[in-house]
Image 1 (spheres, rainbow, N blue to C red):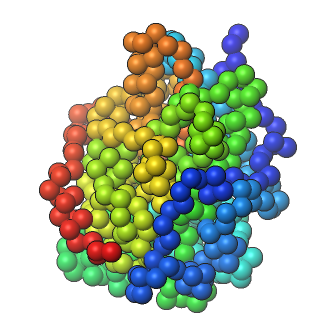
Image 2 (cartoon, rainbow, N blue to C red):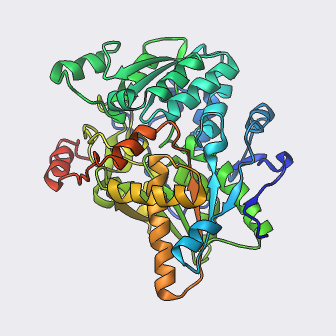
Length: 450
């Protein structure tokens, strides 16, 4: 019998995170203060982040130690299994070898606790009592709620309204772990009130939910802000995924030719790919593909420029591929991919040609998700299904060219709390939506000029 999954023992949970900034040929441009337009300082960030995370945000050290208390909690689900997709390969008739790292085994059902746990740990050590945060599809919010419960922190979550209504079970999970959840835009913050005054039917966006959470943290002395993607320290924490995958592929006697991850803010793509990109920087033939929705085509249609990370302009300017901070995406079911920009680290790597990007419509994505579920048995989250669509396309290309390549992707979460999305697809209620070029240009025209 051929091995289906590769398991490594708990002693092989990584003891250090990998920091790609030590190896990047070009580092991202410095974040700029929204008022002065000067590079932000640690003091600027100290109002909403603990010092330990600020240090990780700017560190150029290649390896950063993982606290033992964090590793002990990681052991609840880490190391996560690496699967060989034998049944999908057979169904496709491809010579490609397909592996996936399955992050849906975490208590919250996604990769997000890899960073929520250390973020809660460092905030607790700094004497913080409460965390304010945002969430799109609810994967991050539920992960932060879980981490808050484990470390005795109160958690307030601003959940994008369209997802709040689409995904009630994720809200219930957050509340089960003790979090307070508001549909965003809410009447709790000035940012939310302003958005509701302009449009009472505003469906919300990640950028707007970030504004509410940052405002909440900045106006309460006992509260810090936590972000589930985009920032350097978040990408850093997620590298436990790729570090484990390297060890598991060594056991299989393999190494990837292609690495694929869905990309909203960039954290799960960073987690699976960053520990391998140093090989590419050093000359190894390796492709890394970021996959995004055609309705929110940040890398494929955005512009590389400074923009706010939120709607209200409370965050620093970050150098990113962006669609404009006041971009309001349509209510596609992949709520975790509806962000107007991407991680500055991912964007710099894409700008330098070390990462590729593809965008897909949601109908083709759900067709790929069904094919995966009916062969590999796991129902993937709609976000991950974007990566699966790209995997299938690459595997079929291998078939067409008669080439055996090794494909690795991150199955970043399961879809068992997203079944309404599958119901809508199976009942023919979903449609494709490509964001109009003129709308993107309109949003970008409102960005400040540097």
